[in-house]
Image (tube, rainbow, N blue to C red; front, side, top):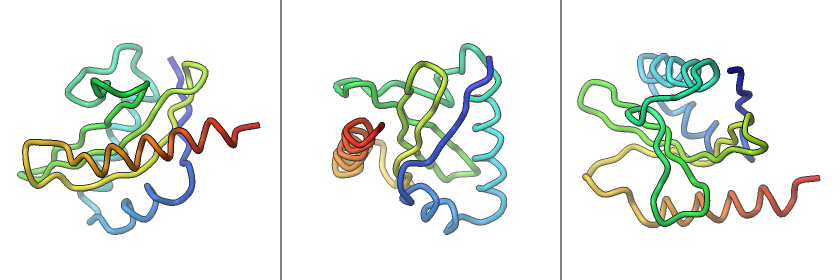
Length: 111
């Protein structure tokens, strides 16, 4: 399996640039898994229930939890939207709403 990962707009890049190097390394590690592995373990990539094709990439580093929202396009392309650091057990609704809007914008503006 060889998936491509692209960024939609600059939301993810801004989030990524704010992280320290160890977190960036962990994000890169999980991206490599997503690129290479057929069945990515749910520990790293999980479909969000109640959404239309939205997934969260799950990054745990030390006691910090990070989420990056994404979707698949044509099965092999992973499109990254926004990312955030989780402070509670629940995924923030506003972050999910933002990701759903970005996903809608991506598919509406795609040529």
